[in-house]
Amino acid sequence: MKKISLLTFFIFFFGSAILAQTTEDSVKAVVNKMFAGMKNSDAAMIRECFADSIIFQTIIIGKDGKQAVANVNANDFIASISKLPKGTVDERIVFDAVKTDGMMAIVWAPYKFYYNGKFSHCGVDNFTLVKFNGVWKIQYLVYSRKKGDCE
Image (spheres, rainbow, N blue to C red):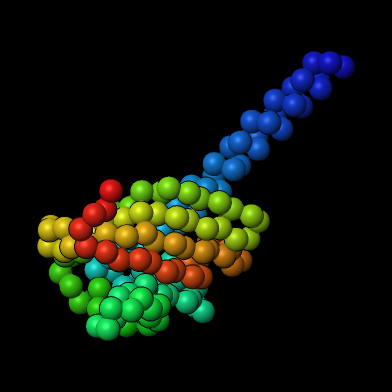
């Protein structure tokens, strides 16, 4: 009886760890796919990553020097990226935190952005993903942007 209990414990413990890793990997895969789409100027690939009702924003410093949050039209963003030659944009991220809870996930990812192979700016991407019909989609994306000190 103890062998069955111990076996059940190991299956439950390690099975849960594998499932958690798979969920985190599937969330990361959507984010990585979006960046691959950007690098390849592939509108369809980027669009597949976004929920139909995506909210896309950036934190900016206006001409008056004041900080503001600006809305980004996802369709305009996709169109502008898709017009670029492949390899023009390269956003390199680090998955600093990935958290999941059933149908929702968040990703905190510092990034460095390169344009035509040259460093342009850096910041942090903050994603909220929602699982729609078993598929993770980016529902909300807000990012900061700064020049200079990225460390």
